[in-house]
Amino acid sequence: MMSTTGRESIEAGRAVLEASASGTSAEQLTECGEQLLDVTRFLVDQPRLRRALSDPARAADDREGLIRGLLAGQVGAATTDVVATLVRGRWGSPSELVDGTEQLAVKALLLAAAQDGTLANVEDELFRFGRLVDGDAELSSVLGASGTDPKSRAVLVERLLDGKAEPVTVQLAAAACYGIGGRSFHASLAHLVEAAAAARDEAVAYVTVARPLDESGERQLGAKLSLVYGRPVALKVTVDPVIVGGIRVQVGSDLWDGSVSRRLDEARQALAGR
Image (tube, rainbow, N blue to C red; front, side, top):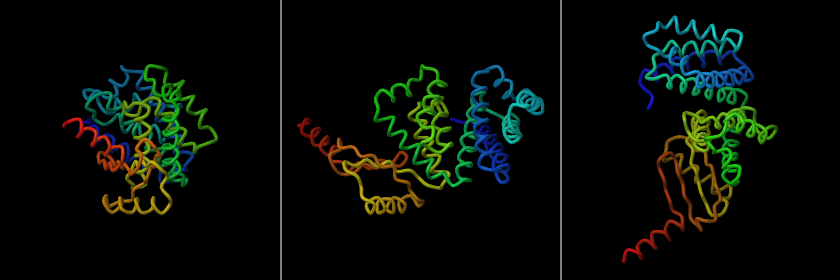
């Protein structure tokens, strides 16, 4: 759980990022996001440095001077200003600084996608890539192996998606190999799908059906869910014959399971309890 001071520090960094985004191209924002990811990984590898940069006993000017000196000539001005703002903040722990830098890296990449009109594509591509990985046991095992080098897994993801997805999709999917916010690869992808949807002011509904929904069915379901949640809802549909029939819908922690397989399970449990 992020501390209150940590959340305030992230908001300060977000304000600097969003201010710079107003006069920045999508390509420059993408570069900023990539550089913020590089800074995140650098901080992960340098425990003494991240402790020094988040030490409340050290003056904010000293912390800022330290990071500006380290980043000089290595990253762009926008990236430096965002990171400098973060290190001036107060953090509950050094790991919160890492998480905050990573969050703003993702934010920068999503802003880039929004600016060049590809955000909806990024959201859909991340979901479809997750389904592709889930459907391939060997690939799922390789990318989900937390004990292996994340850099090699990221290179594999980049090779798989190169030329087949938006550049921001490739960057975010590769970042998932490092574990967004300490999550597993699969959970990181799901988090990124929802972050992309949130950037479009949408909720995400994971829908499981035994047979594909037609366009009219998807439109009607989306409209009903939008009424329930008071905002647009993006449907992420998975066809799984195992559920036999009916439909299963999950939005956040809310689950509606009207599948035939669930009703059969309940019937079996009721019979077993007699």
